[in-house]
Length: 154
Image (tube, rainbow, N blue to C red; front, side, top):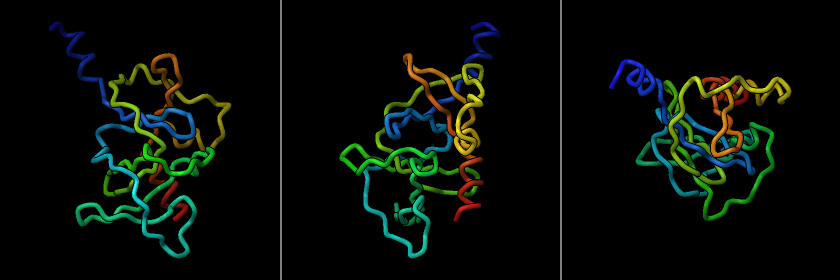
């Protein structure tokens, strides 16, 4: 391998592609701990709609976060394809509610462009950027911004 090939391989990161209301989003693979089937969370009185409840996985409590609500997308009823993506960013753990999990894909930082300015400001804040995957737009989530929004909201 030459130096250029080594540099390209070093900048490739894996992302978990999920579907939310017929849109594709990428979650940094390094933050993903587990993907699990949907289970009804235990509700928390007074919690905002974006947090439908809590789940326990292997003795660890995760708040369930509905990404569709945070991103202003339409809600779908839970189906057999609905998944919870357990992620950890810094010290924050959460179970992200997604409609389906699509695939694990490699992306380079160079392939990710800034989000379009025409998008809703809340959505732009939550995105690290956008790219294309098999001809479709793929929005890359910024987990640090998501955690900041959750701290402001919860």
